Length: 173
Image 1 (cartoon, rainbow, N blue to C red):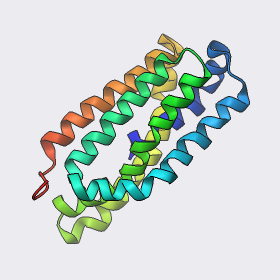
Image 2 (cartoon, rainbow, N blue to C red):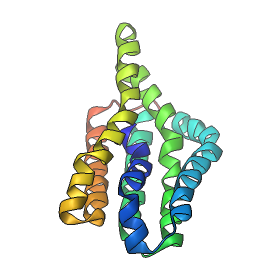
Image 3 (cartoon, one colour):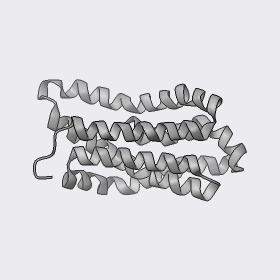
């Protein structure tokens, strides 16, 4: 859940740096939220069907890898158009996040613990905001905003590898 929203939290935390370096207006920076959530809203109904088709493990790995690609592209953005396109790509992981994580919980957690695990899963959104606001923003102050975003992309790839190894394969998927 943290990685599905991390791009938007990072854009908020690092926004002043992007406005200066990419020469984008604050209005354009604000559009990133609209683009990200708008894309996710349009794709969410399809996202649930994708998770049903490929299973939660593959869907989680895919959403993490898509998050990594979107973050890497944000880090490479030369200007506003590229930035907005990368954020739109990042809407797909948002669309996959709830169905994939919910199905992963159903597949791997016994019923008595599902409520608590679902609550912990949901706290991933706040964890993403925390990561963007403290360690990654601090890293941006030290190494630059692009290095911070690329670090987040790398962490998403590492988490995708973990998901493929740790989660059970879906029956028939």
